[in-house]
Amino acid sequence: MNVEAPVNFLYLYKQFMVGAGPNFCYAINGKLKSKEDSRNIYDPAESFERTLKRFEFSANFIAGYTFKKGILVTANFSPGFTSIYKGDHSAPSSLHARTSTLGLSIGYRFAAGTED
Image (cartoon, rainbow, N blue to C red; front, side, top):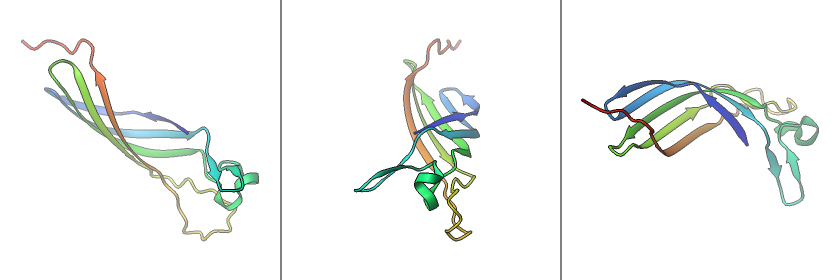
């Protein structure tokens, strides 16, 4: 479970929107589950070589379209840049872990403005 804070710079052209910017992500909770037990993936005492870092830096890309009635549809993609693997250093030094997020949103744009 993560909290993400994207900072997007948007370009609007009529009903179209595109943008990009940095994305800051902080992990609140994560479990490594097996048939026998469940371990906190962010606690080195519980997850050992599988421990992950809570903070990740990524980019965010967004595109969207606003329909005449104010309905807004957007899609975004956030590829992670920093490795979130922490581990106990028993894994090879070349091991990296990153997250990528794909999102779709539907919303309503209030006061979409009037065109003259």
